[in-house]
Amino acid sequence: MSKTGKAWVMAGPGQLEMKEFPYPKCEKNGIIIKVEACGICGTDKHMFNGNAGMVDFPIIPGHEFAGTIEEIGEDYKKSMLIVDETLELKVGDRVILGPGTKGCGKCPTCLKYPDKPLLCQNRFRYGHSKVGEAPYFLGGYSQYIYALPDSWIFKVPDGMSPELAAMAEPVCIALRVVERAMEGEAHSLGHGLGIGRTVAVIGAGPIGLLIMAALKHAGAGKIIAIDMLPKKLEMAKEFGADMCIDAKLSVEERQEIIKQSNGGELADIVVEAAGAPIAFKQALDFIRRGGTVIEAGHFTDGGEIPVNPYMICNKDCDIKGVWANHPVMFRDALNFLDRTTVPIEKLATHIFGMNDVPEAMKTAGGPDVGKVIIKPWE
Ligand SMILES: [Zn+2]
Ligand SMILES: [Zn+2]
Image (cartoon, rainbow, N blue to C red):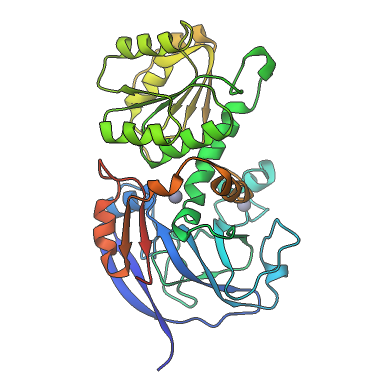
């Protein structure tokens, strides 16, 4: 019997079905990876719930995966995007891929903003592309991934667990938050993020927690976690938060606590990572004059909220969005995961085997749930 592999196919919102596909032929310019772990992203859950906008169903979801090279085409060095020029890859090496192939280089977005290839509409994205023809395995809820030419490939540091390596993609978002908070004005004048600055993070879900860990690594001073759930705040302490504030307190009460902890001033930086429109409004409430607000919670459209523009003028604050990190950041994410003293592996609170993917999908995003990981060979 010829070799096959299992994968979960999402045919539409609410529909998940396990299918068996023929094991693909490894072309000279491709790599076949045996998937060891794949994270369930908030975006996957939104697709499953039918509120992720246009999706080209049927798809094999999953773009947060780590695995081992099963087969490698002889021309991989020419076909793949490898930022470490000393890297030699072979069967058995542990790797991760960027979430998609490189930008097309020709569309208006690529031409105008070459530093943001993730905004290119023409690139291939793992876990978002229509399934149906060989090589089939193009999403991480699978036993294999077929790495197409022009994929970003990175070697996982020795000793790092697949669960941890699979978190490199959400870590990239956290690192981008830090970069956005740092960029721009002269740090010496007290603008933006710098060593010792006070940062409030609204929302202690997986992304918020990773942001706290990255801020700590980057030398933030006081990190203040704001969330409604005591369990999440407890976790925030392990992820670098110096103090926690119950989001059920009134805005005024929370402002008072922040001021008391920051020499009478509101926060230097506020990161919105709750993904609720009201949290963005509150980010403006919690920022000091001259501070920076980073909006990192709304990867799907959560609706609108009225804000008072006077506050933005009066506070002379910067407001920055986070969407498109550069795939080269995966190198930095692995480096961070390897070196941070924060126990990031604790974020993987729920691990499911291949047969339990629908259960895993149901679990993801729950109140006491961190990151949900699928292990396709268990
Ligand atoms: Zn993701
Ligand atoms: Zn393009």
